[in-house]
Length: 168
Image (cartoon, rainbow, N blue to C red; front, side, top):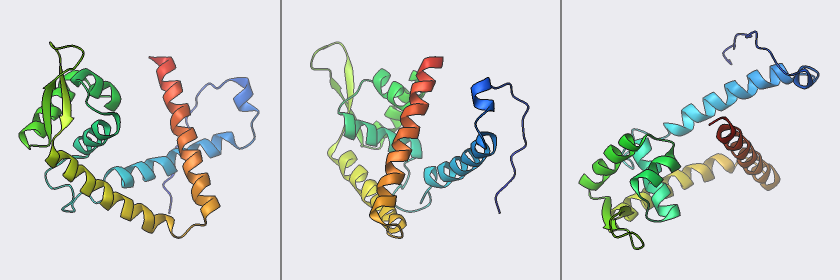
């Protein structure tokens, strides 16, 4: 049973007010995304694949693996964290032997964070576990539906990011 979302009295642009079902669909999307994010973000949290690595630390490993070495400021920006939080997280990952600080190749006075060999191994194990879980989840759907889900989620994420950047 889906929880109910109270109807809020919010002033909306006239164009939105004319779209049939938009209010109800917005509430449904909100509830569906909240549930998906809650389940997804804390997926397999208690499983051994994370060990003593937090969800945010997993995101940091993924970001550095995907984008390459980053400064603390760049990592903070990519993860939407305050610089001090990113710095503490990087320090924790460094203490766990998963990250190392190196001199920036273009700016010798700056340091970059990069994965250690152990950091890459741990990240690969985490990613492989998550991908196996994704395969099991997606197996119930045909290829067109899977492709459509991925396309829609990317579009929603991109649109949300664009709207977020316009407000800041």
